Image (cartoon, rainbow, N blue to C red):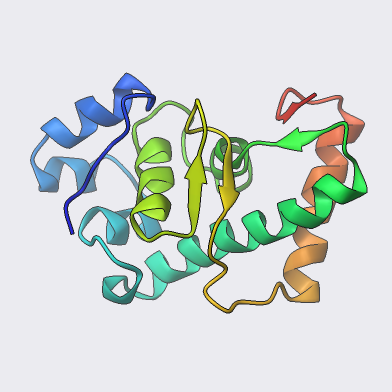
Length: 151
């Protein structure tokens, strides 16, 4: 599978992929991101990469129910990646993760890659523990009237 990046990605991802792989790996401490940088499919990922991927998948599953819960708010996948998963905003790594998810056909995006929707849950069900953790993060963001959410 070829690594493809949509032109709506931030320029930072295009700068990142110009670098040699070792320099890309040295630029992050996130073991899940390091795994994704070296792979193109979920099956190839190590346990750290699969954990990162699974958190993103769980968020996308959660977001379907959240939109029914609060139809005035929308939570961007990008916000979850940089705020909840602590992957630096506009670092290139954030857009790389979003692109990796699309390469594996679990989501697609519209006019901007920051907002994505679930297209394939891979047979995964959202556990109550994960749902509660993500919901707590969402509730905290709402309480701050956070810019993480798009009205």
